Length: 395
Image (tube, rainbow, N blue to C red; front, top):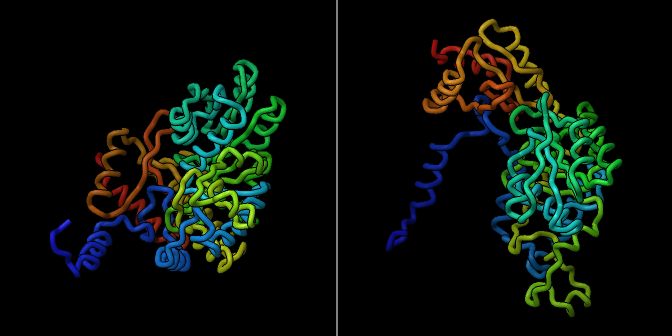
């Protein structure tokens, strides 16, 4: 904060940010669930920033509130739900799902989740003062329905079961139909963290992987992954709109009774946050511009790319493939390398700016993780990535 302003600050700082960025649009930037944003989505995001409506009261955002209602209900229908809330991403969606369950079933609610669950779920129980969650075995990387059934039988309720459709480490999908059946049999509430996998709904080829999603009470979506949106771009779908009563609050300067009685929409119950930017605009522009077919083609492209990369790994004598990809994540490692060597090659490639790969632990070993979310990456990019790893692996 200088005493005198610098008129060149915008150029200097944006240049510094760009020069020091891990560019998600680069084909060898493949570490995380962090997609290159679509141009139309980025343009819409700029318009949202310039207009700067806030969705905590209708008088600040008349058009944005109407658009949000249209988009959230459209996305909710994709999961078989009635409504959806806009969130900052999968973490807030998961925390909000646990909050809604607690408000409906009380402070004795027990969360049951697989060993493969996202860290935001057990963290939500701590933030909300709930009992320690029950961790259900996931021996093959996905939640075991038989172990879930045993836990639901043995542990007193009320329960909230959290399943995962697209794990962070390997992109695996829990057996949702079997889990839903167990929840129905025990009268248990079900949440599905589909922050990664929900984008498969846009694809005719891959949406069957999410069979059973419609049985969930709440579903987390995050379109900065398989939706190619600038962050933030999260949603939480809700099957029973009565659950949203838990968020109702009255603040006279935002939703006075007489204003609500006069017909002004009450937006304060749409989020635990107060000031909210119109993040729904970029999603609306994307959905309308690309349509189901366009988004589905992008999903199909990155899933095919992952299959192609897995094939290159599997046929290369110097590499080991963990398993065929479920979505667009591939785990691999150099044959004979120690865990320390795997970690070192990743850091070397990152430090030299050659490639950005993730890491994941599976089957007791450390693996390199390629999260392929760039639909413009090509076969020679994949071959170059393998060559870089091979050339930088300590022997």
